[in-house]
Amino acid sequence: MRVLLLSDIHSNIEALEACLSAAPAYDLVMNLGDVVGYGANPNEAVQRSRELGGYIVRGNHDKAVAGLIDLGEFNPLAGMAALWTRNKLTAENLQWLRQLPQGPIQIPGLSDTQFVHGSPVDEDQYLVTSIDALESLLAVPMPVTFFGHSHVQGAFSSNPAENGSLRPIYASVGRAESVDWALEEGTHYLVNPGSVGQPRDGDWRAGFAIFDSQTKTVKFLRVPYDLKTAQERIVAANLPPRLATRLAIGR
Ligand code: ZN
Image (cartoon, rainbow, N blue to C red; front, side, top):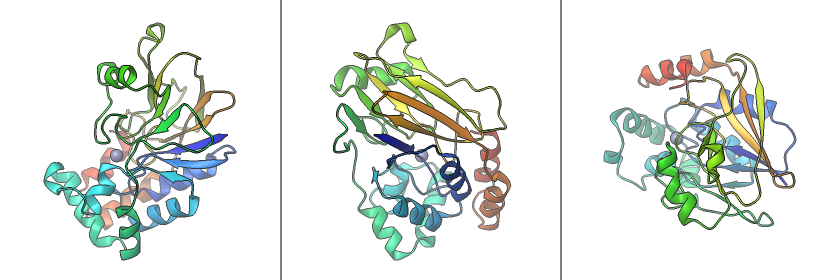
């Protein structure tokens, strides 16, 4: 089974369409949450996610926009964008966000693998450092977990020879590229496919991944997208300008 892994789209429809155009063949879509928040096209991002089918876990922005958590838990920038998004969404799309399941979830027929937004132990936890990842790697019996939330493409592994963490190395910052990475038997992994709509690893290109459960390979991908249009729409929507400028630097 080949699973297309999308995470943290954040209402960036230009980035989502670029990923879908560039995606190699896949059997189903797994969406790791934060479909909305920050970007200017929440209805389009929700609509496209719904059309793609497959599976999805809710993210913290999905919860905040849907009114399931207090916006006081958000920084002012994120809170403002969440309120703007809530007003912008159709009633139907808002209802769709509200019913998204909490992770971890599993896909029938795909053993040893689970999907979460933050971490396997807490849907809102950020896994940024190897130390953050250690608890989940040690405590969770599931060998492979795919997660999002941090907007940083890469993986953590229980194999000390891999030094605990892995970031795909790309040759450029301007064109479409991919990096294949083979999972080893007997090692536990936490894998982040990257953020489609708001990368924070210093690379502005949209990030996503494909997991092939037969070959046990993760293909990390980065693709350029129409950044200018995404930025212009944020500014035209009167969202904070910082939400537009950060997209260009991938932070
Ligand atoms: Zn996010």
